[in-house]
Image (cartoon, rainbow, N blue to C red; front, top):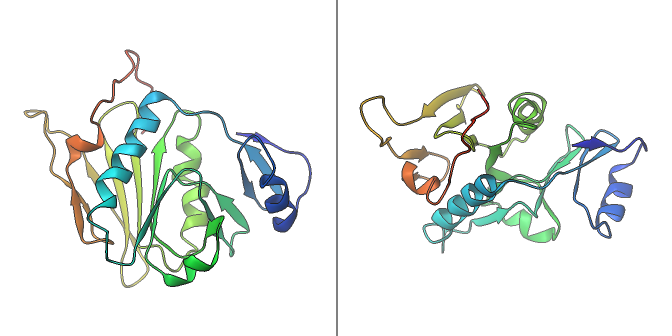
Length: 199
């Protein structure tokens, strides 16, 4: 992401973003241009959104992919999660961003992995509605899941194939009461020959 040197208000950002040919994320007065995603990145995000869509029908939940912004008011940010699910009817009142997501998923890229695990996760944690934050590696088969406990702590669980098997247990999305087949997340994904370490 490339920082825009202009010190923007959140409203100025929204006004400019509505007409910009390039997507930008916004954090505390600065807009950051977003680079294009890899084939693996896009495929993983699409696979997950597809896996979530039908099970959530009729449950009052909506699944959004990377063109919908998440508004994090306490941290003064707007981000574009790769996949986001909201089950809060208040989110039906805003057309270009959502404020009350239950689940946020980011697909890790070499250029964003540290930010997704660090400051972005810290910003997302200020969302009272957020129950689960999931990071999916786009360069090897690994999923990291962070779940908020009733006491406000975040518990970590990882998913990956075991050394003696190419299969892994399903990814348990407790916030949605769903289990997603691990292999289905990586369907049609071709990993690069030289895999960067995103851990």
